Length: 300
Image 1 (tube, rainbow, N blue to C red):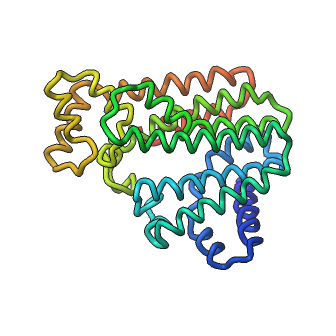
Image 2: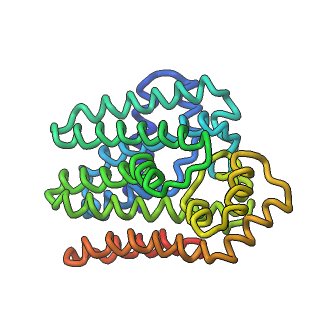
Image 3: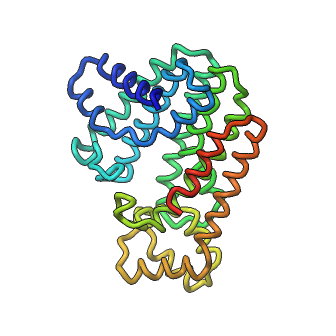
């Protein structure tokens, strides 16, 4: 998609305008990923040129959040390659995130109040979601509602807002597309959490079951806990947040199969994806429907 290249070019220009070669080179080392948010924005905005700077702002914000996330998680890799946290250190990763956030807000200041409030609000939600994620990782969380609220703020809110502001910029209905993005984001994160369990380490670019080892109690583990007897619950909680032996790893995977947790979790993701499809069913947007299917079944 040509527009995605335009987004990359504009982001690079904005960073080059800072006149700092180290910042520029560090930025250029960051993988841009699949740019799902930008793709959604261009589909909603009918590939119009005015979406390019908005998408660039959203991508800078997303990249900034990942730089901070890698520090929080002490991650050495990002998308299968060494993270900035690993190559340049924690201090640089934090400051690069701050630079990308601040540059995004400089460019955001050129927009109307509704767009500014939507994007700034999403960044606030995202940051609150990060804190919630950290706090929930302190002990095993068995409350699905806490998990749902956290992933909405940390992941879905920015996707929701990307869709909403693209609709505002191109005179589409922001309520319809915002609701689409919200439900798509929820489904996306649940599937992402599932992939941590069902994918190989090579496919993930990190060890399988890594979320649980890092202390994150994602939805599959919450559903597993709900299905278990008391002794198994205690064992599951005792394994939370620590490196697993081969036998412990196998025990968890066997329990997932025994209680049908993978299918149960996938059905929950389907509920959100179906809501996303329902809200745009009158919009005749086949490409947006295809994105839902692609995200839901990308490794299943």
